[in-house]
Image (cartoon, rainbow, N blue to C red; front, side, top):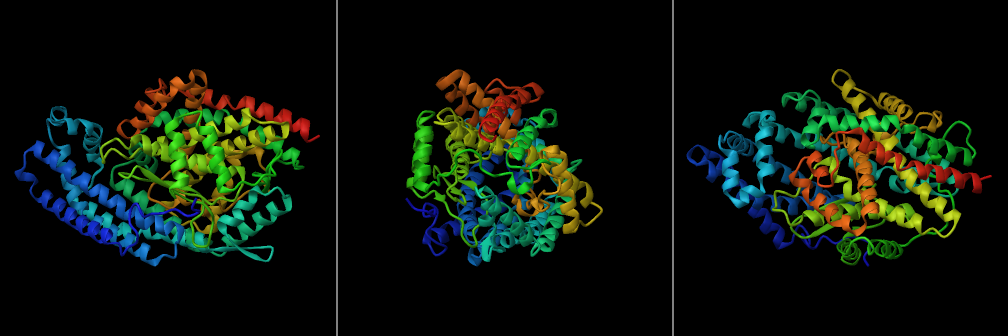
Length: 588
């Protein structure tokens, strides 16, 4: 089993003849799209639709292969200058189609009998959702020239600022006990069983941000101002409204979700207070001990251990999931360990058209790393379930993007808890689950509050690093309440979270959505057993071709009602009760 992923299914290098061939094909496709846009006035509506689908399918696969290869190479080595250069050139090529793409979409949106034409052709019928969304999105499209200008300036604007953030956070080092550690490594020490290690690592982490805070503050300010201006130009009331539109999700659903969370935060604050007291803290949980392991957690896991663990659990859920996870380990889909130049965190990238995904983690041998692998392989399973769609139907929105990943976490954690052999092991597992859930409730909400305040302030003011840290601390106090010690928070969470550094805004509430949505789906699975699995897979299949609300209806769920979200939240109450019982028993 390889410890690093292989990208050979895409290309063997930038000097691979296939890479040059695909690059030439992309240039031909771009030329054809631009030529097509010039002929629109002469074409019949049905011809426009079919040509658009044919050209877009061909070009989409090329773009995904070429760009994904460069992006994945860069993610494991941000000093890969060639990969960074290639991504820049590809973005430049794509920006050359912005004017033509706008003209084509405006033409499609203006077809009076669009519904009739869609129904007349089987391929167009498969793209009904896509084509109707093009019509709906037309009111937010700018002129052809304006779209081209925005695409061109993004390369040296938000995209460049995002690259700077990735480079600085992957290359900065923390001074920890006489050693130089990269950011991922020092952050991983937050899970160490030794309290002195955790606190020293926390202090080293905060200190290292001082080296790069001013540069990253410029990045964040620049990206957010670009987002604000872009949203206004497109006729959205706010960046949040644009995010919800792009996510195919209603404000009614978001309000129901956030309302339910607000009503039940004390459940997770209670967990934090109980844990803090057990660790000897009187004023709530200091940030540096938030991820402290409890119960019996001495075991360290190898990548082989993780493979065996996940395969054993998933074999009882779904054969296709089990077999896909086995392939991921055996066929070098996963890049496991932290190293200099590799980005922090974890992600999964689908290789559409190849029936594969690639998973990046910073594996350190903790049980939480196994859960992270389960999470990212959930994304891969989601990708597997939409592989049979046509090429343009392979993109699902942010909120449902976390469904399969968080569902996997529930399968793994609940199976582990049910099979615990001692109170110490059970406490460790329940606490691990509550720790993760508190992150997608309290921490995610703090990120939502922070990003909201950044947008509210950025329109008129530049926010230096000190001001950004103040906004983050205020958001943490509101979200965590008395669960945390306010004298030991994390003022730099705005700096280390890559989700802020993109024109894709508010990539925070989708994690809470995914956590509670998956929890509700998992409850249905526990009630119905194996008969629910086909419904679950149908729901995943539906995600790219339906709104968030219509996707949930596949499983009989109304997302606009608080009662669904509250039921999911309240399902954690017994976990918190059991956690408190075990803590009282074992930490007297």
